[in-house]
Length: 337
Image 1: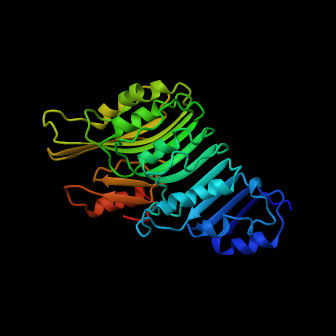
Image 2: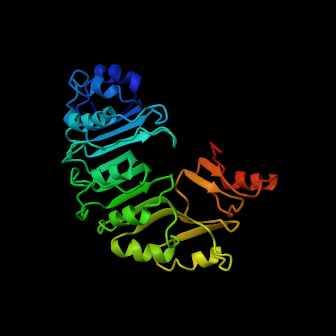
Image 3: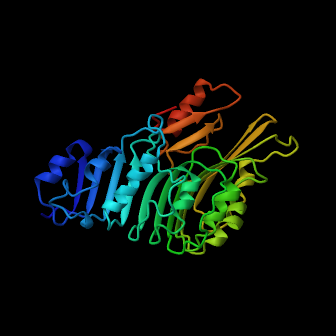
């Protein structure tokens, strides 16, 4: 009866929840979650006959579905909406992939305006199909949201109109998109400027093209100036440009000299030239807290990337034995190369 938090495998959930009485249970964590569980258990009270589902305030679902194997359907959206409808007093909902490649994502495309809505939810951690789903989730359907952690598959512009009022309740925002985008300036920046009360910001963006590099001066003038309460800023920004002006050679020190704001702690950068055709400039806070890096070349800095588990290499020059020695030292927990 003193159990307040319970972690269960999806295959055992019926046995465990049906075997006891949990009057003080407020947090439920389910491993190997899949969409079939929701209509089976989260639509009536048969499984929760000893538990009032309204007492569950924290729900964490660890998915075992791979987005490459699961087609994006309206059913996914309906399933996630059922969760909020069933657990009516949720304060915290996390739907997490079991690895960086698994992706049980939410899509609100063509959904009614109040699909996936809640008047109690304050913390949400979820994967979405694209950035437009993020805009939809922040259009007023989750009015009490103070923390929003989202990984999205694509960032692009849309013709759909969303409520763009200031997000005055939001204090923590994390946006991760591992795929390249050409629409950082047109869609991401306007969203960030609505978050004037933000205290913590985490962002992974790979911007392709545009008039300027994402470096310290840009971050100061385009983002930080709109967030006077911000005290934690964790980021990884990559900017890819081409063709390259052969008369202008940008160095790591040139980029680092733009980070003069006291809000920055430790910052590093990587500037890679690929002939006269392309240049990739990466700036990131230290220690690196993201799990995946893309298009890394021979120019690996003397830094430990302890959180990176997935790495994609790309360079016009061949990778030699000495490079892989440095790579194993820089990425000690690499799982996928």
